[in-house]
Image (cartoon, rainbow, N blue to C red; front, side, top):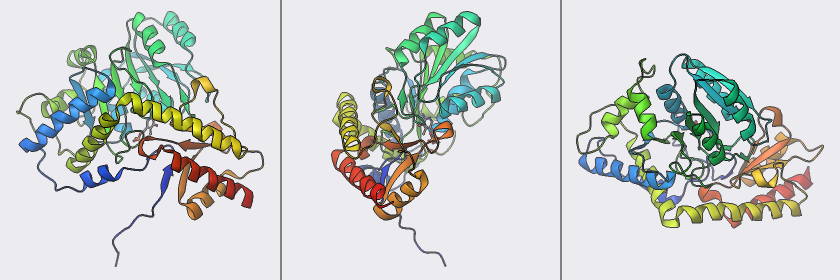
Length: 373
Ligand SMILES: *Cc1c(COP(=O)(O)O)cnc(C)c1O
């Protein structure tokens, strides 16, 4: 016979999920109501306006996709990319790789602008690519590369893309709520995020937003969107304006209570304060790590405050340290991926997890584990 599952109490300081605030967890546990209930529709409208706040946008089409960040990614690509479309992907880590996969599966023609893992997207390389290839329809890139801890300059990249008449698709899974992000001012046409990073909500929901120009593209496509579930023209009939909503799929009702509460918390703190808190805690972590002889891998000017790539000292076994941290100290940190596997740890300071107490606890535990091995 199986018993009720009680998870261990972990401090989540990896690349996501981050710790979920008790307020969000208690919202999650409230009674389920129907996804077409008038009270739920009012909640949906409030989620839209809170997402507009978080994304800094007036886009009507701002909503949570019922699926993780990867579903939001797919929603942007399947709706905007048609067979034969040329899409430039600025790739500097794991998540750019996935964009390429998405474009290929949509029948599009991906053009790669590559930078080394651990470097930011180079705007000059993008400009060169746009001069070389005509008829590029879309430029896509990752704002905050969680695989490497690097922030790219979304404003500059979008400005260049726009000057060549392209639409822009931006992955803001890790940046939303942690780093400045201005959908309207930066001319981002389609953007997707996640709930489990700086929003500190439960995983499995993906906030997305589409500009008027993107919506226009979607409505005037010549080919059918290949995904029924992620077809925004169908989703709009459920998430649209007014009280008339058509059933598309059953919304993850309780998860949306949770998302709503996490956005209320963000608005109470105010976006600018949340960004500043992530910055200040990054500085604290940097100093705490320096004190125990550890250094950060990413140059200061392109460092993500919410995801810190830490150099693993020579001769230290990556996996055994992370295992001991989790097993003996209940602290989760992330491993390096791809070419950075075994070379860096990834210490997340996201949302509710980003506070001075957690930083002190993590640094003390890391120091103890490094000295006992
Ligand atoms: C976590 C993450 C994703 C994927 O989100 P899931 O919720 O795991 O599907 C995509 N892009 C970036 C930059 C991420 O950090």
